[in-house]
Length: 360
Image (cartoon, rainbow, N blue to C red):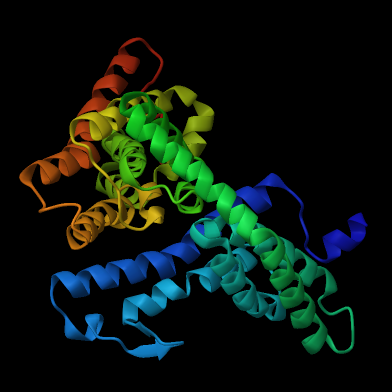
């Protein structure tokens, strides 16, 4: 069996399924749901006819350019997962149907359903791939058959479970904004820097509202915090790659000296409750944006999109100066001030030294 699994490149491990697959799923979400949402927002805000006019009608539903991208989020996630699992072409292409089914049947928790169903379908497809003389028929048939069956069997329950957990977190955040502001901000911020996907986690849990705002705060504390703290070591290149890219670049240095992580974590514990209690910052755009932080400014675009959605729904009258002040302070200014201040104190007591955050 071990020889068979090795020959088929089937690696049953936490890294393969919860790091590689989850991270790839987030990229699939970014290239469909998130981009589609951004396109829709740009079109609506700047009154661009080609972005707001329906370009296709499917099953009586009209779709704009952005709407088509959003509709393909399930297939995009599944194909991205298959790519991360190094699936052969016939398996990879078959996952398009699997992803659509799992996401559609999973409802609000569709991304979690796609993660589970796509992984199992891909691995079974890889196992059967090129084992028969009619591979072009058998491999897609098995991959799609298993995927559709599991989607019908598991997706509704997985989606409901993920949605329920997300709803519980959001409910708890509205009831205990201070405590939950700290917990959500710290946990999601840590997940962003770890080699797992905070964006995929937020998407799977449909994490929006006040909890989504706290998640944005935690992610920004990590990204902006590390970018500014390590400026002396990494200069402008490091500032951009971490502040607009990802704080995950610091993981090798965190392994060498975990104490460099103290400042961003403490900062997220501070900015999280400021977001929930003082500025009431909510992230009511796409849930995946909650776990993106300042990566491509997606977190901030998500917050803005949420404001626009709330105004359209009649739950918010207008975007206020306080909204903008809160967004800028929480996402940029406070992390840029708090993290270096804490880190300088850590240097004074000898826990951190110059060069500890140098990127290779």
